[in-house]
Image (cartoon, rainbow, N blue to C red):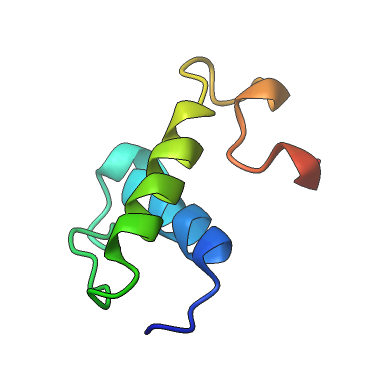
Length: 69
């Protein structure tokens, strides 16, 4: 929707797509987004993905939301 919280949406989309390495049947595979906010959302998604750290999933520094420790 045009009035979506794009920061929250970007984190939710990233989590939904990458949860369990994307190997779960409930992993997100499509994003439906209003054309009016498409470019903004893509920028925010790219920014979230740029912060991801690949590594041991048990290491606290490798969590999606570092502020939620």
